[in-house]
Length: 263
Picture: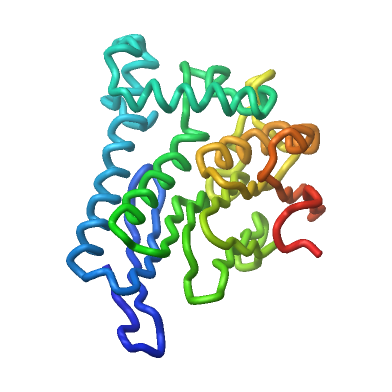
């Protein structure tokens, strides 16, 4: 953990990066007057929570709870209660996305990967806020949960990375208060999102970004948008508070009219 800026001229900033859930989860905390010992403990608790989630939900670890569930070695009732809770959220997200996000359509059995990373980051943020930290950002490999202000009177500003030229950004999203920004697409893993109806990789969208109040749903919707492309954008009029931004092959851009930062 690195701490920067302890004078009155600049707010306290605490940053940390943790390798977990197959990605890097970065923390940016603005703890104000919260004592150092409280900040350290809250960050430690948030990180421990992420590792617990990885132990339960990883589809890459053969000994994880979800891997055993997928193989039929466990029934849902034998799993930790968080598994049933996440699968219930997956059902809600499947309905909200009109089926474009469907963990039950994946090879090998139910796979909540497209939602659980955002859910875990949201819970990590809750842990930090419960400790009294007034402002923080948790970035789980592009799925970002935020709260508060990085500086008085200033919004968080989240860059949407260009999936072709990773040094550039296609948009910058301002977020004030509590919010979430989730991005899915052909970045490090290439075209990995499958179309639920065919089981084949989706190629119609390079990346999809969803902004909204809840990161678990935003994460699932971003996955669904990559799977369904422009057709999947039709779900957003029925989802108040959520908006999206798509990067298409060839450099085309599409967004809902209420996407933050658009004039």
